[in-house]
Length: 251
Image: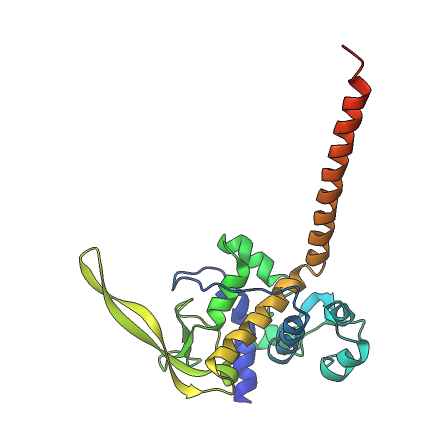
């Protein structure tokens, strides 16, 4: 029951968590929207750890066939909230109950990577990637968690079972003639089910999926754009030669 309550609290604060960033510098994510294996793993993580509270109201399950999944694989592994692959990704939690219990409805995550890029004036993928890797235990907080990328965050760590528990390591630096503490790294206090490298890859896969979900046609759009530019380049050469041939006898 405690885990369910923490997940609900996470859902309510997830959207607000990305409203601003005054903590550490963002780490660089590597969204692999052309990597089918990464997108499939990201989709699995999204369904298992995000969809309990968050919806993706503009994404249908059958659209996951675009990342290499068959309809049967979707039915067998990803359908927890519906029995139809044509349905949209709806959260398990009842929005009315969420609003009654916590005073708000968990935000939709369909275009979270794109929207946070607009808000933060930087890559939304980097923002999400950094936040999901910067949690640490803080007994002074009601949820027991804090975050270096977003100090005093209200959202507990949604992936703590995978990452485990870590604590920040500081170093003393001089800033404008004064000593101050700066984040130097992290120390694992309690290992999770994944190694640090595996967790980084998992978060990157999740970010890749969120980036893809915000615009599933983005890769096709890029491919079409490349072919259009190639066509225009070739057409320009032919047009230039035709123009030269047409005007060659005119002085």
